[in-house]
Length: 309
Image 1: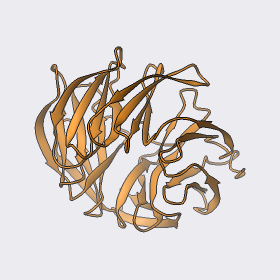
Image 2 (image 1 turned 180 degrees about the horizontal axis):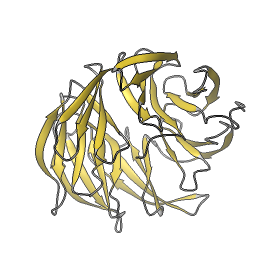
Image 3 (image 1 turned 120 degrees about the vertical axis):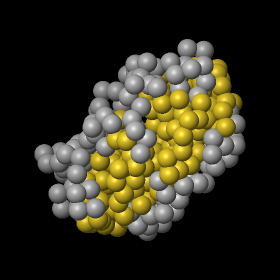
C-alpha cells in the first residue's frame, strides 16, 4: 500500500487499536490517505536503529509490522513475538525489549540489523505497561499497571534488580537526560511521580500534580520539558524536569493518550482515544486547532519529522 507522500512531508501514523490498522495522514492536507492492516491490537510503535522501518507492535496478533516511515509501504511482518504491547531499542542498539502487558513478562531480543532472536523472557509483576532504558543501556525501567510497581531489570544479566511501589496504575515512564530521575504517569491518580535513580534502587521523591489520569509522555524538544497527557482531565501538562513544576497546560479533548511533537515544537499531535480522532494542539494559542477522524481507539502516534526526543 502506497501513499504517494515520499516527495513531500513524511506521513503521520496513528494506530487504531480496535480496528487492527494504522491511519496514514498527510500533514499538509490533514487528510487520511490510507489505512494499513496490521495484526490485532496495535498499541505502540518504534523506529529501527537504521531509521528505515517503523515497527508497529500488534499485542494480540503476536506480530510486528514493519512499515516504511516515508512512503507508508508495508515492508514485512514478523511473527512469533509474544504479546508485544510496548517496545523499545536500547540506546546502544544491541537489544530490542518488549513488554507483554497481558502475559506478565518482559522479553529481551538480540537485533542484528534485520532479525530478532529471543534471548530471555523475564517474569514480572501484574501487567507490565511501559518501558524506559537509561542512556548507558544498563537498566530497563518497567511500570506494573496492576500491581503499582516500578521494576528495574539489569540488561547485562536480564534479571530483576529492584521493585518499588508507585502510586495508582502507573503507565508511561520517562528518564531525564542526565539519568538521575525517572517520571511515571499515574493513570489511577492525578500526578506524575518522580523517582531518584542515582542510588541502588529508585526512590520516590515527589508527585507533580498535573491532572486526573496522567498517562503518556513526550519530550518537548528542548531537553528540559516534558508533556504528559491527562486522559481523564482532558488536558496536556508541560512540566520542567529540573524544577519539577508544571509550566503550561493545554486542552486535549476525548481522552488524550499518546503524543507526537512537530519538528518546530509548536504543535502537539495527540490521539483522542475515546473520540476516534487525532487532535492537533497549538502550544502558542493553547487550543485545539484541528481534529482528524481516524479509527477505533487510536493509541500510538508518530511521524519521522518530529522535535528532538
